[in-house]
Length: 143
Image 1 (tube, rainbow, N blue to C red):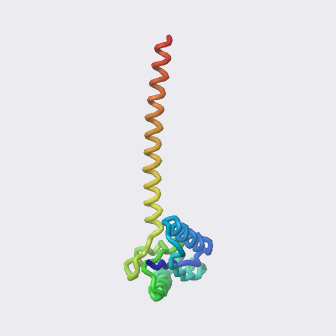
Image 2: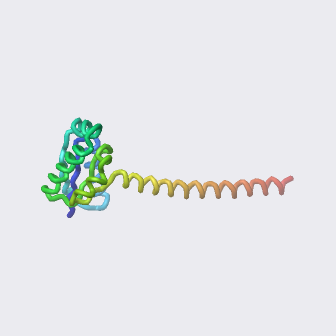
Image 3: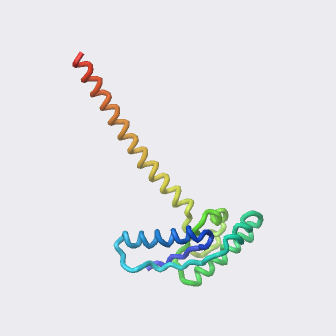
């Protein structure tokens, strides 16, 4: 079983949300027990300060968290907030852990939903056109 690593604490609410969703997804797939999850909680205020004016410091701060997660034996990691994604590519290039980008996952979901929505709109517009044609034929035949 894969062990998940989360760089958390950036907003305890989002870390808890990730934790809950991972467990829900686990159960929805019919698995018993709970998945192995390791959370490295970092200081949100320090991260925000570094993100304003010290890109190198931000990368080093997040790399230290990823190194701790790697030491805990995780198989991959996710950053549980948007701000660390400012340096995601730098982290992915340096980390030996595979990293999951919430930006990429959100973009994929948006495309999936847009595709589903556009397919639904297309079906609706076809139905509407057929309904209008039927209505106009019925009106023409009764006049």
